Length: 187
Length: 190
Image (cartoon, rainbow over all chains, first blue to last red; front, side, top):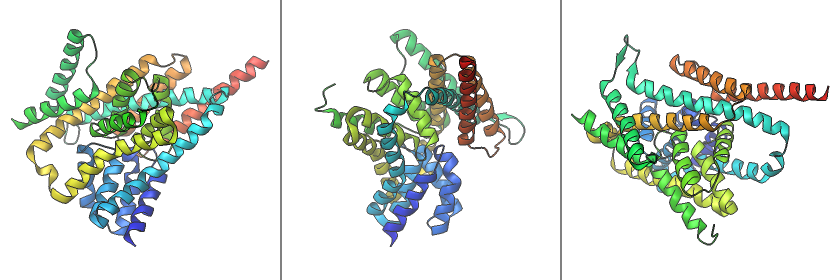
C-alpha cells in the first residue's frame, strides 16, 4: 500500500535526519532508491529544486516524492511523516524543560552547545558565500557575477541602515537578492 | 498578548516565514529572529539560540523544530500545530504545483538566475545572524574557544569535504563543557 509506505519511509527519515537536510541526504538517498521512487539523477535535480523553492528541504523532497507516487494525499502523508518526529520531540522537550533549565550542570552544557552551534552557523554562512563566489575545482577561479551580487547586497543593506536607522529585514534581503540575481546573471 | 487571536496570528506569521525561507534551516533562523524576536517579541534572543541548539541535536528539519517551539511557547499544543502547519503550507503548495506542471523548473532562465542571487542572499543572511549571535553570546574563555574551534573545524570540514557530522561536534562540545563544569565544581568544594 503506497500511502503507508510513503508515510513510514518519511517517518523514518524524520526520525534519523540529524543536523539538517544536507547531513540527511545520504539517508534520504538510501530510502528513495530502496523503494525505487527516484534515481540518482532525479534526486540531484530534486535537491536543486528544493533549494530554490521556499521551505525546509526535507519537506520539499517529501512533498515531491509523495506527489509523484501517490498524488496530493500521498504528498500530505509523506510530509506529515517527515515533520512528525521533529514536532513531537519539541513538544516533549518543552514540557520537560522547565525542570531541566534550573539544573546548573545542564545549563553549563547548554552554554557550551550554544557557543558550538554559533560557530557552526558562522562556518556554514561563510562557506556558502565562499562557494558561490569562488571555485577551486580547476585551479582558482571566481564567479564575478556572484561577487557583484554580494557587494551590491551588502552595500544596499548598509545604505538602508544609514538612512532608515534600522536594519533591512531578511525577507527584503531575499527578494532583493532574487532581483539582483535575475538582473546580474540575466545580462 | 491577547490569547484570543493568537492562533490565526501564528498561522499567518509562519506562512509568511515559510514562504521566504530558502536554502534550509539556518537562513530561517535569521527570519524568525527578525519576526518572532524583534517584531512580535514572542520569544527572546536566548530562547532562539537555545532552540537552535535543540534543533541541531534532535532529528528532523530545523525549521519544524523552531516553528513548533515558538507556537508551543505562545499557545501550547494548538499553537505549535498552527505554527508548524503554517510553515509547511507554502512549500507544500509550491512543490505540488511544480511536480504537476513544471518538468524542467530549473531550466526556466529567470528562475535559475534569480536563484543564483538568492543563494548569495541566503549566505549573507546566515553570516549576519551568526555575527548577531556572536555579539550577544557569553564571552567567557570556554565559550569563545568552543565557538572559534567549531567555526574553524566546520569550515575546514566543508572546504575539504570531509565526512564529519555537526552532531559529532556538538557531542564533543557537550563533553568538554561537562568536564570543565565538573572541574570547577570540584575546585569550589575544596
